[in-house]
Image (cartoon, rainbow, N blue to C red; front, side):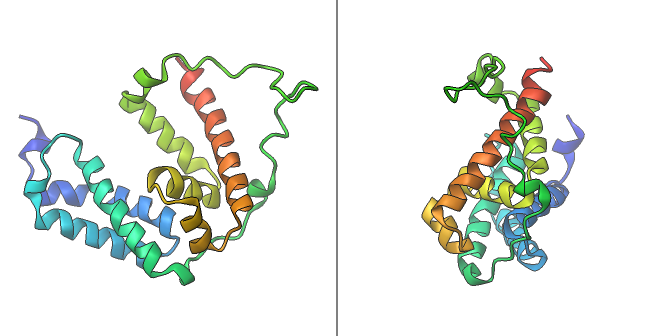
Length: 191
C-alpha cells in the first residue's frame, strides 16, 4: 500500500492546497479572491469525499471543483478584476524571431509533433505544458486558461476584463505561439 493511500482524505486534499492556490492566483489576480475560491473548493471536497471516485487523480478532481469556484468569483467580482500592466515581454511581437517566406508561410515547417493523441495521455506532457503555461506573460496566461481551461466564452472574458474582442484574439494568438514554441523546445525536440 502506498503512503498516499494510507493518508486520510482531508490530509490528501490539504497537500494539494498550494497547487490550487497557485492556479487560482493566476486566474483571479487577487490574493483574497484566490484564497476564498480555494477555501470554498477545499470545503466542497471535504463535505463530499464520497464524490471522489478515484477515476481521475485527486489533483484533477480538485481543480475541476476549483474551476467552478473561480468562474463564480469572476462573475461576482466582474467590475473589480485586477489586471497587471503589460510588461515589455508582452508588448514584444512573438513573430519577430520567426522567418516567413514572401507568401506568408513559415520558412521552416514546424517540428514534427508525432502522435499528439498519444502524447496527451502522458503525464510528463502535462507537466511540460503546465510549465510552459506558467512561463507565459501573466495576462496571456490568464486569458489562455480562462478560454481553454475554464472554457469561458470570448464575450464573457471580454466583458469581465474590459477587453475588445480584437485584443483578446491577439493575446490568445500570442499565447498559443509562445506555448507552441515552448512545447517544441521542451517536449517535442527533447524526444
